Length: 123
Image 1 (cartoon, rainbow, N blue to C red):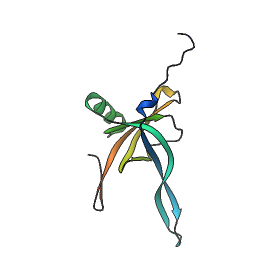
Image 2: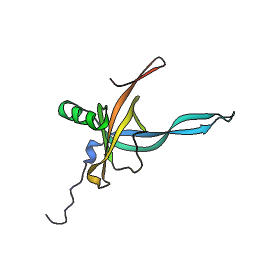
Image 3: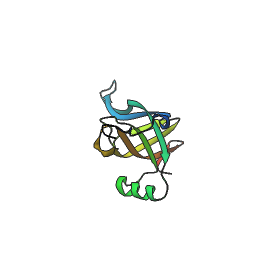
Image 4: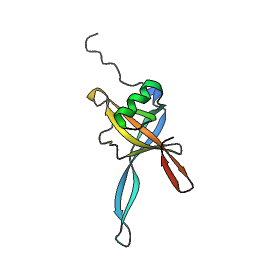
């Protein structure tokens, strides 16, 4: 069909409201630099665990990844950011603008595990 544009991502699959955060430096009352996570953008997304060949391929591209977060395209997302949803925190390892069409964004992530003051990245 000529002129027909296929949607890149089905809206029904975007069922998680994910918060993308960036680390921002501010100064406290003593003039000291303080780093804190602030909301960059909230997006409806799918969160998919990586398995098999997809996991191996993602780890070759992003170094370490165990979750793929897929959303509509958002400009400015970088691997220095993180995504949160439902008490889970995901460190973004790689970002892909699918087919460079500014329609779909795929973030390869590692879930952050936090226990009693100890933070570990990975599963």
